[in-house]
Image (tube, rainbow, N blue to C red):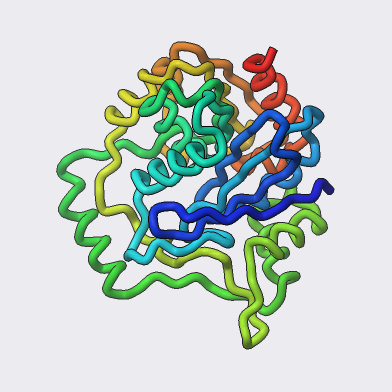
Amino acid sequence: MKSSDSVYLAIRGLTYHCRCWGAPGQAKLFLLHGWMDVSASFQFMVDAFRHPWHVIAPDWRGYGLSSRGGGDCYWIPDFLADLDAILEHFQPTEPVLLAGHSMGGNVATMYAGIRPQRVARLANMEGFGLVDSRPEDAPRRYARWLDQIRSGARLRDYGSFEELAEKLRANNDRLTHERALFLARHWGAATETGRIELRADPGHKLINPVLYRLEEAKACWRAVTAPVLWMQGESSQNASALRMSVSDRDSRKACFSSLMDRVIPASGHAIHHDQPELAAAIIEDFLLGALN
């Protein structure tokens, strides 16, 4: 298992933790994790990389070893601004190589259209946007958000890392016990009582009160100039959760001027857990095109 170091940055009033593998002099690759995940989750994929990358993976605000946001909930624009500051710190002048999973893929893809000159290539694992909304959804959504704030968000705790690992395996039977226990020890932390609580702000469980507008996301995607790798798990339920039909999926893909499409066999939504070796090989071959 490749060893990693921790780098802490002052980003927009928060302490941001970045997990780094490899030497600073090597080509940089930024990995962005998804919702209810942490940067260490990319360990299995990093172990499979053949090229000597300097991998930089932040814990998003409110996750892992980064500070919590301090508000009631979390907003995609904050993640975009955090990413902008992180890239400015590590690679201020040259266009970057980005890869993101799920929420991280969504943030990376939006960013690549907002700052097209900053992204050389982008690998997007299952970050295909969200369910579109309608203006008439707003009153009900705001009301639901207010109700959630009033009742408060909570995350369950666990009796041991083993118990948390078994929960992870129950949610994803492709995880080996060894990998599940590794994830549990990074996703969770022991409290003074000996219980294991997740390294996540419960505020992430609250819905975003502002409606998701797919056409706005598509406008950002159309502004992406970098080549994009679109990676989908063969057995992923993500498309059905997004109520994404074949025509909807194709219309989202059509936003990108340069797109490579790959379906990952024997994988669900968590491509970086289910097929880390294959995902690493595909991503690496795609990204190395920017270095050759």
